[in-house]
Image (cartoon, rainbow, N blue to C red; front, side, top):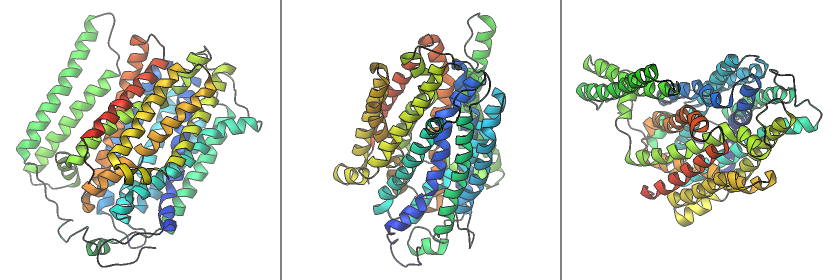
Length: 504
């Protein structure tokens, strides 16, 4: 356990780094089940392929709101027994485990959408403070190792969770069911996931003690004035920004509405989510301006102010994250329907071929996560040799080529090669941006900035859910494999954008 220390922050032992990372095994176990099986659940309950992205939207929208709030609260929290970040780990774990128990027993699409929302929101409560946790606990020289260790547990958790329905099927659990009924292999997998989630989070909570604010001050990472609220954005600036974004969002929303009212071939209703989100951001800025004018320095104003003063490194990394995660969501949302259509020639969700491909996608996801777990040990070595941005660029290029190869490979077994590239990219996405970011962030705002940084995971998810259905239906004529190719191109763009980042 870390001890009080005066001077620079001490290095932790390997066992301590492992203990503080085990919780991510449970978090990713839940994410692995969600990513590999939710599209399948939606289609089993009757959703059409081009409707799937919009069904994912409620979850990331909730994350967009929850993440900076949880980050801000965890920055301000300190409990003598439970610490700063750990209370949020446990609260999220309890609700996520309950959601995992209930999810596979729903019988309507709208019920599945609500459960996805609850599950994703709860996972975000646990996950968001974990990134700041590494920044709190480790000196910069160990942060790449800390995030790589998280990547290792993420990889292991995702391997097992992705394989679980496949393994249960091999053990004789039914993988097929009547139309509109979720197979037992999925139901049992989610129940196992609930137990593992709460157990893994509890392990980290009870084996790790956090540094107190006084200890962080002794390391020179916090000062007596850090808890003072200092809003740098004048009310007039809040109002100006808010007016611009509100007008853009409302103007685009009105434009889509009037266009759809006058033509037969209407634009997709999912676009309202995107334009409405722009308007809501503008309205939030206006509300912050009103509160600032009244000298009301609450958490909402502070978070909106932090949004206006992002560190330069964070801005550059945010763009890289955006294109990286857009690619990942294309893969997660469309792998099962795309490969079932491209390799098995079926879109019938009740067919044996479709469900077999659904299981194989779970196996493929296990492969890329297994590769990620192995590559986690390679990342610190590469980062030391080449620099963190260069390592990240190499990994993203490998991932982009892996996604594009989905279209080129006609044998499902060859896709394991694709998974190697995707695994390297996934491992790096989970470690390198955060390792570079924590060096640029003040310790007293580590949580809120990590929450804001997660916007650039959530925003591409919303865009993917909003636009990919449009692309698949109208541009690719329902050929979902081309949507995966778009994802690969997006990841290569992200790789090129890392050239703008200078490692500190």
